[in-house]
Image 1 (cartoon, rainbow, N blue to C red):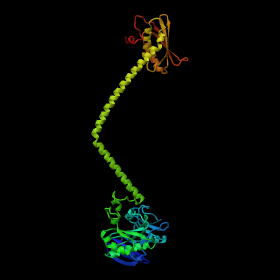
Image 2 (image 1 turned 90 degrees about the vertical axis):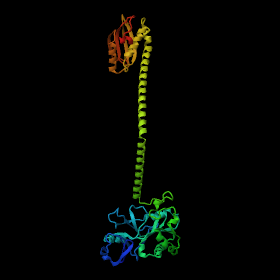
Image 3 (image 1 turned 30 degrees about the vertical axis):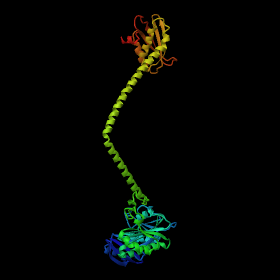
Length: 449
């Protein structure tokens, strides 16, 4: 059930429509209007208001380009608790204000305040008798561009909407009930023509386009072509690729077969739709990746085991290489020690080869942190006094080395001397002259015994 309401001075005319047919009509005084609406069973129903017009609709002219006029918007119920609440906004294109559903234009501030006070006193859900169908604006965006305005008519049995659009801006909107005009197509065509002629008084209309129910289009097409001077065409003739003939959902039906439709939705709603699309695409990609990973799970396990085996082999090879490098470094250190101090032992007349073995034994007895810097040997009777200068600053390593040397045979006493201007500590010990007939106690064979 919907209610049509006309206010003329102090009188109000009411028309109640139920399921497309007019059920009751009544005229009352303005102060008795709330009670009359309750008596007619129209309380809490949609009420379309015509203010100061002689029929149950209203012609409203949208703001002209470059001129500031007062515009009244009726917000959607989902965004505001009171559906009858009006808000004063400046002229704007479609979609610049989120949640705008119905539009009234060219209203003075005083008249807008009067409508607001009146709407709050009625027991109905008041709407201005005009709306902007976004689908018609989408159709205008698809049509070939021209300098003149385009009249778009969306025809249904319970509502007819005529919108005049110019360069993407709504210039005029009219909405009325075809059931109040009778069953003839001439009356519907005359109402559309009257709207076009009303706008043509200030600016010419380049063409008229009809969309909606095919039966109403067929009944109105021929009379409308005789009633107005501009060309009249059906939407299906202009956009033959559209599977859906209704202008409201035209932008969704074109797909890839037609031109792209500009997004004229409010920014907030547009962001919500884009966010939902991005979320759905991300979920689909994640599910596809999980399915692919589950299908390739056996191959992944085989590859993982093969990789683990390869890593183990490489670890064994690495440890073997490290051991080889360590052995080579020990051999190089021993040979370097023997070569470096060979000239010292060459001064001694006897058993210089055995002294070389002693030097190698000292090098083998030294821990890795001890580095030899200088060695001196002085003969004192049947024994030798040996002094070894070290480069190690690690006191623990030096003491360990001194302990190992002191535990060898033929070593009488080991002394750890201070720095005294040297780069490192010194170890001094006395060594009995080894018998020429026995192996050196410092050689590897002697240490083994």
